[in-house]
Image 1 (cartoon, rainbow, N blue to C red):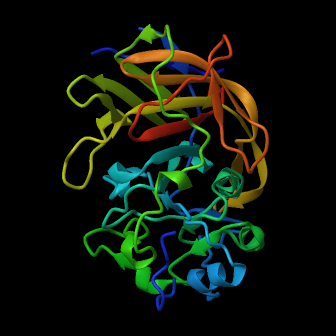
Image 2 (image 1 turned 180 degrees about the horizontal axis):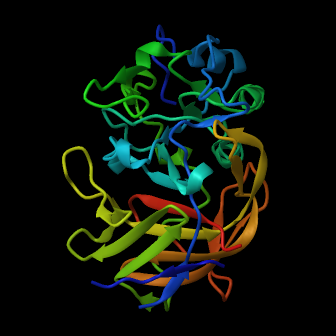
Image 3 (image 1 turned 90 degrees about the horizontal axis):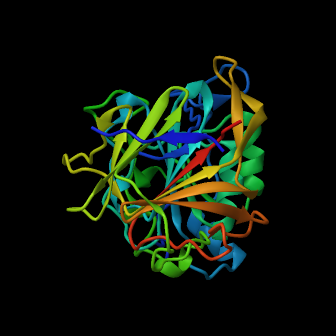
Length: 332
């Protein structure tokens, strides 16, 4: 797998609303303008049935998780609401940058963002959550039919305008934010968090680790163990990652998955191919928790399944209570 070098130094929709050691090196990309097929920029979804009406028509009673695509370009930092996510996925997109998907089940922040566009890989990644609420702003035109057919409920500025706000202090497109309380009354709870990850005691063994860096072509993430926080402090591109209030972002567990990243049939507005990250399959992984690094294997047999983590001897590799960051890494 790729290497990560160490560095020292349900809830209901609101009824009337329109709804030392080496680890793994990787690529991540996210073009600020998003994905297009012919140079037209992020395409809006246009008007569609509200998410609440969609859920009622389907007869789906299971509470959904809330998944939000979050901009991670330097101009979009610091993010809002990322500290309250249960899981944060770091994905590869165009141009060597990174984009994030934040998943909420146990808490709903006051605001989340900046919200940005969807990618084809998101649809496979989200299948593990049944029928999630998927929040994004724009997608390329050829992708929209795939989103419409996917088992999810889209929430966009076009479908649910009242759920979004703009920050006048930031330049577009880095200024769009979701108000979760306008799409969900309450968080769905931990039972909706069907990632496949198991919480529990750490496995035996592991290597003491206090800092590890995951490198992408045009981005890097550093995780520094903090005894005081009992978690991994997050840095992006060499700078501490913080909330809008200036507090450090932390992860209880960091999972680095070695995945296949291949070309897709989509391109961005500059003609760059949009990479597709395969999250169904199996491969090597490294798990950081409790100030130690654990070698592991990951397996996700089908899109509707969660991801299991096992040690070299076949035992489970549990995650610690608290936020989990998952970096989808390609060593190829």
